[in-house]
Length: 182
Image 1 (cartoon, one colour):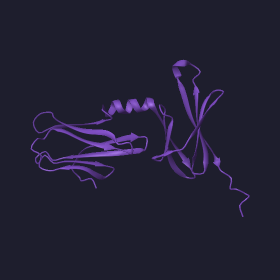
Image 2 (image 1 turned 90 degrees about the vertical axis):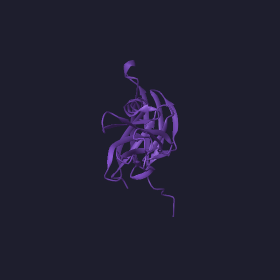
Image 3 (image 1 turned 120 degrees about the horizontal axis):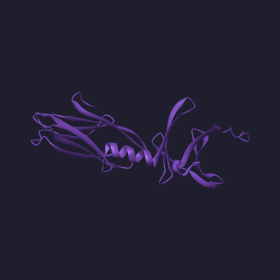
Image 4 (image 1 turned 45 degrees about the vertical axis):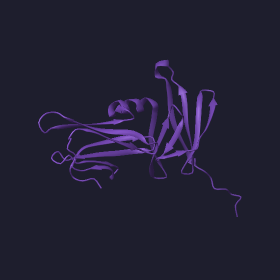
């Protein structure tokens, strides 16, 4: 459980979910604690060097992450987070280009659906789902099931080349129960 002396908090969106990273830094003791979603993943007490880097992994894929501690004069410190070898902002910008995320209501519950454009993998609420893909006249369709609903992510070329490929999530009605069962 995160303690009240967190000096920095970041939210990191990965395909399998959004992770909250909290960092606590004792500037008199050198203590360093990293929490991910409220769970302590690193603890170092009584560090003599007050600046440096703490590395850890995030998410199901074990994405590399690191908190950097830098002195900015006197007893003031600056904290930054790298994810996947990039600053958090560059990582976010890269993910905006390589993924598409939707939050949709399915049977009254929010579902987070993420498409990884480079691999065409689909994640629903943190779980990678089985998909089938096919080419159609105006692009491609990636089909999967979500909570008993058949879904399709349709990829079509934009009307103008500068728009690139457009991805749309289509959520179908719930599947009908099998009438032949007794």
